[in-house]
Amino acid sequence: MKQYAKLILYVFTVLIGSVYASAAGTKENPLWRTTDDVVDGWDWSLPAYVEPAPYSGIKFSPPAGAAFPVNQIAVLKSSWRECEPEEGTYDFSPLRKSLAAVPAAVHGVELHLYASVKEVRYSSGKKDPGTGPLWLIDRYRVPVIEEKVSAKIGNPFQVFNFDIYNQEYHRRYCAIIRAFGQSGIASDAKILIVYVHGKSSSRGEEAANPKNADEEKVLKERLSAWADAFGTNAYKLAWVGAEEPMIAYAYELGMGQRNGFVEQYLNHIPNPSLGQLLDDRGYLVVDEQCPLIKYNRASGDENEEYSPKEHVARFGPMESWPHRYRESMLRALQMRRNFIWSEYTPSIDIPLFCFTGLELGRTVNDAPDAWCYLRESVVKRSNYTVKNFERWLYQRDGEGSKAEAAVKIPVPELMQNHAPGYYFDCIARKTDKSSGNSNIGFALDDRFLGRTPAKVAVKITYHNLYAGRWNLVLHTKSGTAVRAVTAAADSTIRTATFFFDDAVFAADGYDFDFTVEADTADAVISFVRVIKIR
Image (tube, rainbow, N blue to C red; front, top):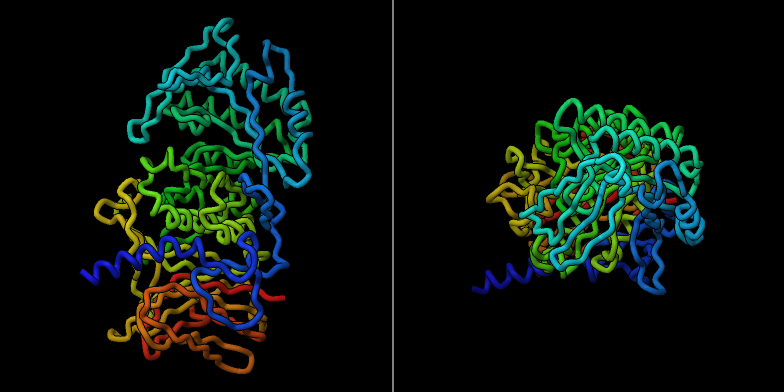
């Protein structure tokens, strides 16, 4: 019974630890420390000179008086019904006024031009006005489709969409997109990302994957109209689907892509269209030749479903949410996203929120750090065992360096992409001296710092499960450096930081640049970062 109580206490500590553990300083912007130390919890701090990438941002509502070191973006919503109240009479003045009213403190705008909904009806009797013009019905008899309500999600509403594949609808839709392009609004520098909507049974007019060749032709013409309207700014356009053939065509047109469900953080494993691959050892690998990543196009996701009123039934008890929030934010960064919708969520984990805002939109050439999250899950699709979320720092097994998955965190069965019977994540890896695997090996991407000696900080977030000592072993210009960590067996999480003036990362490919090595005790490691120091 005592062992069970200890396990419950440890799981609770892991789930909430990142909420309260931050470095010295304000919660909004934890202060960077400049000397070796060990702090409680996860440490998401970055040097004060690190600023957000220019082409990046987060949609959120900051608490009054709070300041966050991130690019805040505003969401502007317009509709076909608003912009063409009468056929052939285009009025973009409300949208222009909204753009002009964007506060100077806001970095830029996420723009939506909705167009498919006739109306939304709620079980309460409330109705939402639609987004497509009603003259489509009166003049052209465009059919209206009563979309199926998702029993799994339990939506309390019913969406009624225009048939976007109807030729009269499609002809007029392409006309307003052409008019939008001629308005000049597309060249407004405030606009950073524009969702290219389809239709769906949910609110938000999400992807409409074609069911046949005729529908595919219509959707391709729809995307082409948007690309023509934006011209050289087509990289700001984000198609809201992630499946072939439409995503390939969107890339061909110079467009980007947006998902809306990173809360299910094992989704799209694998998905080559998003640069998400699995190698033959189960590691999640990023294909940086994917056009979305290679050309730094609009790449968005949404991590905002944390309302107690709405989302317990969809994701499970609130106690599990800090874990889901952390996995989701790190997955968005692993996918190389540059925009994220995170409404109402900063307070779940403020230091991680700030870290995310500073990391979005980075490449290996301008990132302030490289990191490896040593985790593991079993994905529903073919029961893949998936290892690690990584950004230019890679953990790989080798002789004497096979790292075991450790620290199981249960997840609700509502998590859609976990394989049945595997409703848990392992959020760490450990050495195993007893089997001769006393090392965990790490390879730094050869492009990140090159081979010349560099000034860096190495942060290692670890679990105190075994009392004793383990070491960080790293090469420097003057020889091998060993930094010791003395762990306890008190089931806490801590982060050790070590500074080096002349670290050398000379190994090729996945060969080890440095290791974590068991000494008098095994090491249990969750997160490792190599941070550039000016």
